[in-house]
Image (cartoon, rainbow, N blue to C red; front, side):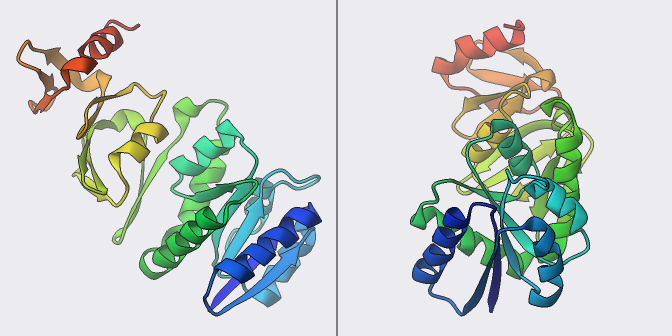
Length: 249
C-alpha cells in the first residue's frame, strides 16, 4: 500500500495535492498532509511513509533541510516546487523526481507510476540519491555536481567530465566512460541532453551526445573521431555548432 506524506507550508497547495492524489491515483493508499516540516519529522516515525511529496520553499526549514534531518528513514521523495532552475538541476542530477506547481494531474500520475517502479526495482538506492542531492546543493556551482546513474544493480555517481559520450537506444541511454565500463540507463537521450546542458556536451546526432573534451577530430565524411577511437556520425546541420564548440565559442 502507498503511504504518502505531503509536506507543504501552504495549506491550500497541500490540500489540493491531497485531493488530486485521492481522485487520480486509483491504488490502495493512505494520504497524510502536514504543513510544518518540524512536525513532519516526528510524524514520519509513526506514519512510516513510503513516499513524501515535499515542498522545497518553506520558512524556517526548507525541503532540503528537512531531508538532511530525515536521513536514515526509508522513503522515496518527489519534490513539489515553483520553477527554481538551480534546485531542479541538482534534483535531476541526483536521479530524483519533482513536480512543478501548479501540479498537473497527468504529471502527478506519471510521477506516482515512476515511484512505484522505483520502489520495486531500486528503492534501496534512495538514501544514496538523497545524500548526493544534498552534496550537489552544497556546491556553489553546477560544475561540481555529481551525476547519479541508477540501475537494478545499484547506483553510481560520476563527474560529467568522466563521460566520453552517450548513445541513445530507444528509451534507453548507454553511457561510455573514460575509465569505467558502459552503463545502460532507462531514460531517453533527450532527457540527458537537458540534464547535461552547460557541461560541454553537444547533441551531434539523434543517437549521440558527446563530451567535447573527448573529440579528437571532425572529418569531411560526416564522422567524429573520439579519443577511444570510436567513429560517431554527426548530422550535417549540426556541423557548424560542433565546430564552434570545438573552437571554444
